[in-house]
Image 1 (cartoon, rainbow, N blue to C red):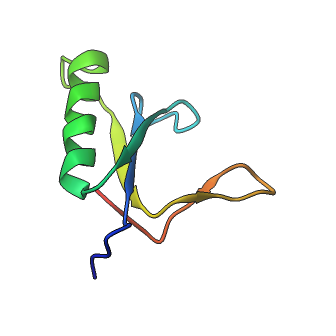
Image 2: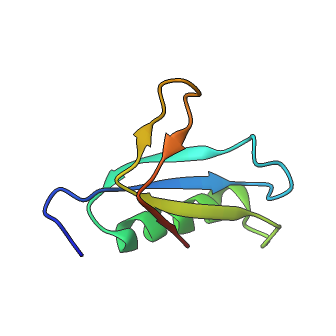
Amino acid sequence: MLFFNDNWIGFYYPDKNDLTEYKQSQKYKTVEECRDWVDSQVSIYNPNDEVYDYECGKNCKKDGSSDLYICKETTK
């Protein structure tokens, strides 16, 4: 279900073997905008199609105790 205030944040991992290093996007209104942001990161950090990973999270909030993001939904 899509609500007016849904937002998406992208998490881009330039090296899928090291998920502690990542880039985080601003908030977007749609998952498509998040995926467009991921594509822009690929062109910057992995132009030779090296191994990377990503996820787009919906309605994410930081967990106060661990400083990690908890998202209602994640997708690629």
